[in-house]
Amino acid sequence: MAGPVLSSSDIPGPPPSAGGHNLRDIAEAGGLPGFQVRLHRTYGEIAHFAMPNAQVVSVASPEVLESTLDLPECPMELAPFLTPLADAANVLLSGEQDRARWRRTVIPALSCPHRAESDHPRFIDIIEESAQRWSSTGEPVALERELDTLALRLMCTSVLGSTPGQAAIVERVTDAFERLPEFFLGQVYGVRTTSQEPAVDSALTTLRDVVTFLVDEVAPSDLISAARRAGQSSKDLVNTLLAILIGAHRTTGTVVSHALRQLMRHRDVAKRLRAELKTVLGGKAAPAFHELPCLRYLRRTLNESVRLASPVPGIARRAPDGIALGAYRIPAGTVVHYAIRAVHMNPRVWPRPDEFDPDRFDTAPQNSRPAMAFVPFGIGRNDCPGALVAMEHALLMLAVLAHRFRFESRTAGKQGSRFSLGGPCADPVRVRPRRSR
Ligand code: HEM
Image (tube, rainbow, N blue to C red; front, side):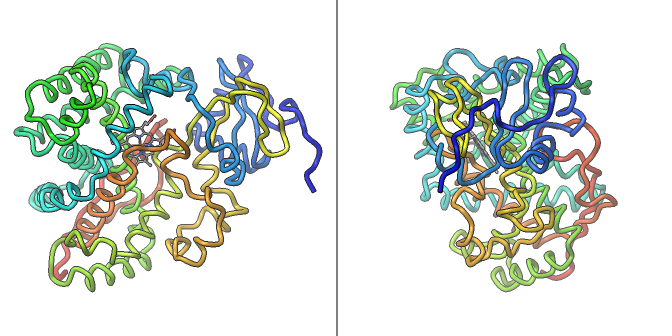
């Protein structure tokens, strides 16, 4: 039987610290994801906290997520680091109708299976290029940075085709992105970061210049042609590419670096994965496109890495009118934050949530979980348009690299201490080419 309906003021949560909000608590927890995992362990699956400009209701219950799937509008005041990149036409800041139109054009062009298959050999070459470079220098590899750049290169190939000078272009984009979110988030949370304002200004200029060059000078790819057919101007296209590059930054690459660090810590998992790769790939360096679905343990390993370290740890929505969130009725305008990381760490749904166990993604345990227990790509009408392509790239990167190298590091999966928006800032790793594949 349903319990009494409670008001939003009954939602439990920590008292605000200095300034009437919880920013200091968030910074002390190393960022929002860690803060929300703690918040929900202490106060339950629906809890509140305060930002300087909003009272936030945070949700870690898959069932509540499902019952509120279609909440519209992301309150952009919670993501001020995006505003300098955006003008009125940027999808990340646009209204629901423009966004829906944008998605109808971009998602089919991004997720086309024929293109994925025809790009597959090119993707392998690009991954191999990085692998060769790592092997030939013999130096420790800055894994997070390398994989981020690699993932952006694959993404650029998907959306732009093979552009001459692409590697150098992507290096510039990665450099620029390195500075931006951290700087703006640092400002929001009052945390010192390594990026300084002039460097940030020049990073913003670089990004716009590079993307404008890509739109104006590069032969039209499927995506650009589709966008032009749908009436996007050159300015719209610059914004489209910026949105895609922002989306692809520190997401796919972070997922793969996290998976490789987990493999360094969990030799039993690494051994099982290696056995699968040997069986499916035989003596080859990389899987053929049609072999990807056969790499079931690889996919489970990747999913489990994503569960523990979703690169997008939460998403914000705004309640349109007095809606129910579990037992609570919340007023219109309330900011609802789907705490993706905390959903993935919910001990009711994920027993022993801190443990790394790819078998959680075996068919039987998967079927017994609520539908929204695993939501790394968000939910509802604004979910991630890059989900398919990101997983396709991540699986291929992980397959090729785990098959070719043994990775070693002193800290393996441990997170660095630097305040960080995205992936962990960890030690460089040693890559040891395997004698036999
Ligand atoms: C493992 C990799 C990735 C993860 C976990 C991820 C996750 C997410 C999440 C959680 C959202 C918010 C969804 C929501 O509000 O419901 C999002 C939005 C978005 N992502 Fe991804 N993403 C990944 C990779 C990518 C890639 C490679 C692209 C490039 C195409 C991309 C492009 C975008 C864009 C453009 C949005 C905004 C969509 C909108 O607001 O309509 N993402 N992503």
